[in-house]
Length: 290
Ligand SMILES: Cc1cc2nc3c(=O)[nH]c(=O)nc-3n(C[C@H](O)[C@H](O)[C@H](O)COP(=O)(O)OP(=O)(O)OC[C@H]3O[C@@H](n4cnc5c(N)ncnc54)[C@H](O)[C@@H]3O)c2cc1C
Image (cartoon, rainbow, N blue to C red; front, side, top):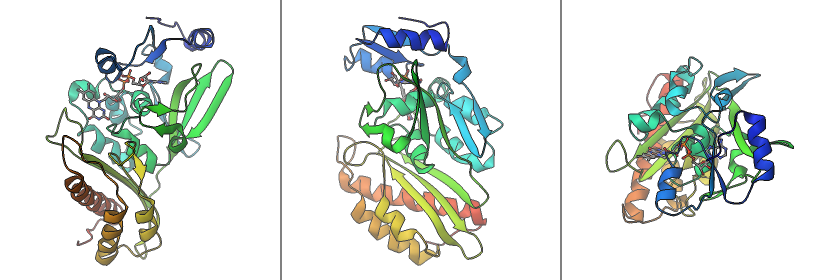
């Protein structure tokens, strides 16, 4: 195990040691993978002491969350006000209390699996990631950073230092839904996150982004046809019903040992309807009847 004294020390180490080196934050994903022999790390480089990357702040119209910030630090932050209720919606369904206290946002992003709960939320927030190395930094859209299941665009000399997304205003909101066999310590059958921006005067959808995990290909993905079907529409019962049939055709979910593809698709449609109606309710203070 290599424990860097500070960021410079870490970046210098990564510049010169790359073979068999694996970064570890709080280990709630990685240690299981090492135990299952899915990863053969000769040296673990411990990021958990880099407390300068534990923060949540709003700056220049953007929300910035440091990579070492845990789920419980996020929801405890005074910056996470009612606009960002979505992070509380994730936290109450995330693992159990012991996991929420150690799971970092950077670890969730870089684990890049089909079961990470923050990924659909950050995708619909159109988040970016900031990567640092000894030679400089790169900023990428999360959507481009996530290449495939367990594959990210991170070079061996880089670390993820923060994720950021545009602040939510009074016309926009976000909601998250998840369902599994039980409420805690369980991998979801399917997750759904929605970002909605409304023209509140006429209840028209100005922007919408929808993401699910457990899609074929096994990385969270946007449901773009359903987004297109709703964009510019007055959000009422018939618009939601029409979008549900688009979604049912668009979704390509997998069967696995947990549930069948058909069941997962039906559940995804229910989660979509719940998340969309909750977004509408958060913005308008009234329900869409569906
Ligand atoms: C019992 C249990 C329940 C769980 N429940 C959930 C759940 O409900 N929802 C959910 O989403 N996840 C869940 N997880 C998975 C895990 O807790 C999360 O993925 C967590 O966010 C990982 O954070 P970590 O700090 O522990 O990452 P680690 O395990 O330390 O790292 C995960 C991966 O990210 C890389 N990494 C970490 N930080 C960085 C960085 N800054 N830069 C570059 N690479 C980095 C590591 O190299 C590693 O490959 C659960 C895990 C367990 C054991």
